[in-house]
Length: 267
Figure 1 (spheres, one colour):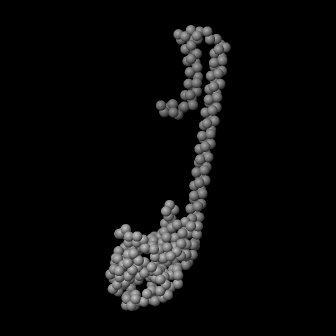
Figure 2 (figure 1 turned 120 degrees about the vertical axis):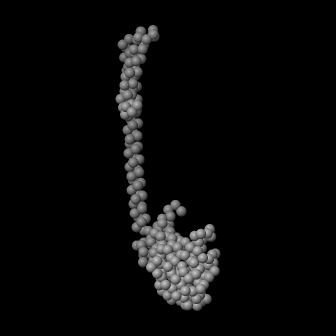
Figure 3 (figure 1 turned 135 degrees about the vertical axis):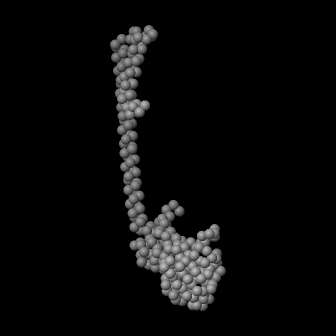
């Protein structure tokens, strides 16, 4: 069986020869009276027609075979071209991809400042209310003035205060590109609560930074909160970066570093 598959052309050629020879012998020596009267002229005409038809079929098969090879070559060329285009597009995308670094400012008196947009204080009052302002309301100052804050090597922040927490968040755009339509949202990781939209859209170019101190009010529920930075590059491709803040409601909270940019191509 394997021999036939490997030698299909040869086997077809043999069949083309054997079939007419078999017919010839069958009509001459078989029990058919009509075959007895066939002469050289008739058999020559038969063989001419048969071989002509076989040659035509072989030419058609050869043409189809060559066309199939040509189609395969064109498909391979097209695939390589598409892959090359995709590779070039990916290089362009990566070169234009922003990267927003998220860290904590050690500026102790930041809460006393008046911040200019897009900087601002984010106030988280309860699980359905979050808003941003250029200056922190005075009602929070007394608690913050009496608090002490320390950051250890593990990123754990100890704050001696009874009811509120202020995380001096700072964003820095590190990549040689432009991040536009930046928006910060948050949600609690262990619930199905709706997103809280914390900032309006803003833009950061290379080296730009923005201060977004986050104040957790006494009524804001404890838990692990996922903060998402949604933004676009200069050509409108969407990205997101995620970081976490553990709000324990006591004297401690912790900060998890931001993830690398994730390209949200199909979202």
